[in-house]
Image 1: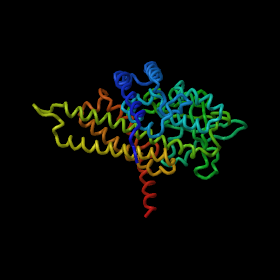
Image 2: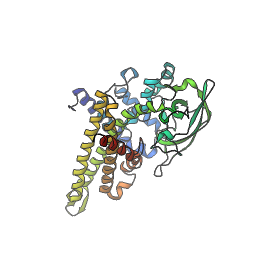
Image 3: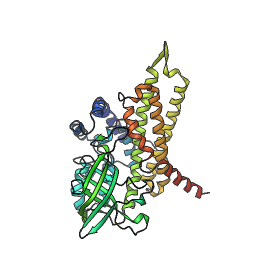
Image 4: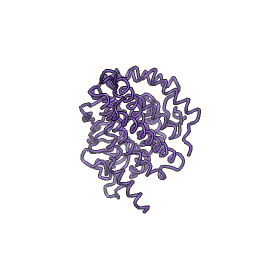
Amino acid sequence: MDFSTSPATEQLLERIRDFLVRHVLPREAEILRRGFGESEPQLQQLRAEVKAEGLWGPQLPVELGGLGLSLVDHGLVSEVLGYSPLGHYLFGCQAPDAGNIEILEKYGTPEQRARYLAPLAAGEIRSCFAMTEPDSAGSNPVLLTCAARLDGDSYVIDGRKWFTSSADGAAFSIVMAITDPEAEGHGRATMIIVPTDTPGFRLVRNIPIFGHAGSGYDSHAEIAFEGCRVPASNRLGQEGAGFIIAQERLGPGRIHHCMRWLGICRRAFDMLCTRANRRVIAPGKRLAEKQIIQSWVAECQAKIEAARLLTLHAAWTIDNRGFQAAREEVSLIKFYVAEVLGEVLDRSIQTHGALGITDDTVLSFFYTRERGARIYDGPDEVHKMVVARRILKRY
């Protein structure tokens, strides 16, 4: 199996790295300090510069103004962009918009594609995805209670969602709602487009994460649907197909997440090694000379490389054999890369000492935003259980 990258891909990756170094990293600290909401003018300017460089939308089809990369190539780009918390947003491949674009491209009607897909792909608007609920276990989404009843030629939606990422400032939401309570577990839910200015759509709050509620794109909202009425033509795909569509969205999405996490790992690892080499702990002695630090360096490097190869193999399998053939690999990377991410961040913070837990470095931002990696898109424990059952059946 050949994981070598083509000269064209290598050139693209180098162009993206160069853009991050020259244009993004020098402005990163100020933008993160001010927050995404307040920094929107600067972010839009940087997005315009990305487009001017011809680097916009690596995952988007060419006909939607993107680069049309394969899943493996986009994974490599995602790894580079993950080096900065701003990377994916500036290049137009951020979640949840990237996943919503995939759904709209495959299931959207011509009218839906014109109204929602085209401006979303161009970065003119943002979207959100409302699935998780505060009163039902996210590890078992068939327990969803938010309901959409058909009333004439409209759906009326009632219920509550939370951890609806990036809802603050989004133009529309794709909502997973129960349309047939009597159907079997995975046939009860439907996906429906809900513009956020629809009466009955209420953003209750941005949920504080480790004390940070965030703003704009960098936020997770609680949403109330209170008699929220939208045309039945806003349905995506067939009624009852919500879970099928969600699975198609989550497969490639987990590749994107894992490669982004690996980019974060590389940033944290670079900072760990730089700090260890520079930090004087006694006359003529540096932190890097301590065996425990050397052990962390070796272990982190090994685990990052192992996680990277696992993820690229999963992406290769999806590209060449389809998502069904890669289901086991996708579950493996979801929990393994998330655990590696947490360990590398923790080691880097520990190496920085008290500095590591302040906002003077990017480490605290990564730590508070990415601890959820082991929870969202299915908790690690569920993925381990599912994989273990499949493996044990082979024996």
